[in-house]
Image 1 (cartoon, one colour):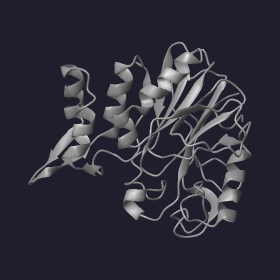
Image 2 (cartoon, helix red, strand yellow; image 1 turned 90 degrees about the vertical axis):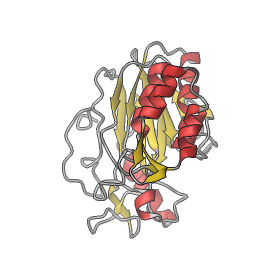
Image 3 (cartoon, helix red, strand yellow; image 1 turned 120 degrees about the vertical axis):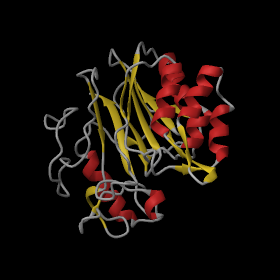
Image 4 (cartoon, one colour; image 1 turned 45 degrees about the vertical axis):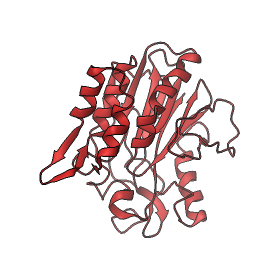
Length: 275
């Protein structure tokens, strides 16, 4: 893992190497914790799950319609650089959190977030939804959450923080992985209302409304900033150090899978573990 330290630069990637994946620039991440986010590059999947460059894609989602043998080979490529098999979840846009520290590799529980204290790799699959990684500053507890707008509005980040603190986490930091960017995330007023309904006070409501931009000539549509919504929720629940949030999966077809852009597409993974 010497070539995969957080903050390292990305280079060219073939089917056997991780050089094209994202190593989080996450100030303060403890030395004993590893994290990465895969891209669509470096695998074996054929179109429409390919890499967008004429080569094999690294689709890691077993539910996306891809050849199961290709998904298995792609997962093996990722597993080769990890200390353990990732704890793959059955994600349903909810708020359930599971402790995967001692989970069997084939369990695939129905949940949208997980935590671990040792010996396990937390994993989230996305193709526009926001993956959020968590770590306490002591490196004792890590977590990962799948935060599409429904899960984000329903409280998946809060649930993950609660589970981590119950497992002994102290101060917690977070990293926001690749997701749909503000200028691509067109939503209706019901999305804003879902967040406003959970805003505990006027200050929180102001942060919600600030994350939605009106579209000229279309009073029933807004552009939503999912990164801003996540940051506001995290700050409100005691997470002051939040890194990441600079990518757009929809706009960067050469690097990321995007359901909104392509419809039938693969899934990238965002992972964290205690070494």
